Amino acid sequence: AQKVTQAQTEISVVEKEDVTLDCVYETRDTTYYLFWYKQPPSGELVFLIRRNSFDEQNEISGRYSWNFQKSTSSFNFTITASQVVDSAVYFCALSEAEYSGGGADGLTFGKGTHLIIQP
Amino acid sequence: ETGVTQTPRHLVMGMTNKKSLKCEQHLGHNAMYWYKQSAKKPLELMFVYNFKEQTENNSVPSRFSPECPNSSHLFLHLHTLQPEDSALYLCASSQETLAGGPTDTQYFGPGTRLTVL
Image 1 (cartoon, each protein chain N blue to C red):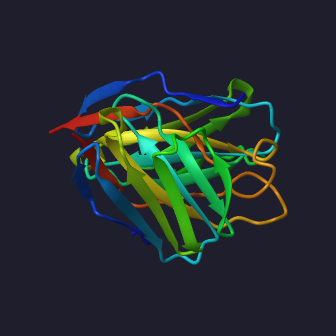
Image 2 (cartoon, one colour):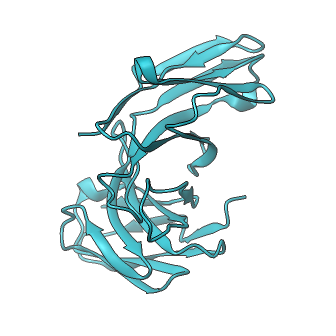
Image 3 (cartoon, rainbow over the protein chains, first blue to last red):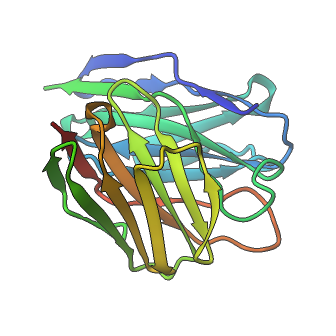
């Protein structure tokens, strides 16, 4: 069965520090997507990135970067020079082709990592 | 800006009340979802609608009743809820194909914070 593990329940760093959020996934499928979402205190999940299982290139978007490694089934997220506005709960999620049968299906979410950036 | 709206944002109801949550997506998507987020638990999928047809009911109690009149609107009707149903209810939408493949990016609304007394 598919599974997403975010072992870090809470991380607290001082502003301007770099911080990495870990995500480890389990799947028997060869075709899948991985996602990261941000949930600020307001509650809305904000989409950050989608990564296709066939694309292992790392991605950088401003201060955000993602490291996808199929060999270790990990999809880690790094924030460089963190800011107070980065404080939120971050979720890693997985969707698979085989078990969805094509079409719509729920995403499998990790439990989330609460990131606190202190000024 | 995700283009998915939910009303109301906050709801307090008694165990004998009947209420409805509304979700509307302005993204032209063909699939919509209800998730439940309780404290200290992962997001739980409740219902999936694909092309307005319900394709999944994740063993949700019958006191929760979904309705999808068209591809842009999704409702969750609530009746005789229990205090443990208090949670954040999130609606999402995505654009899916019939050809198969993993479920694509889901865009979420701000959620309805429900408290059952």
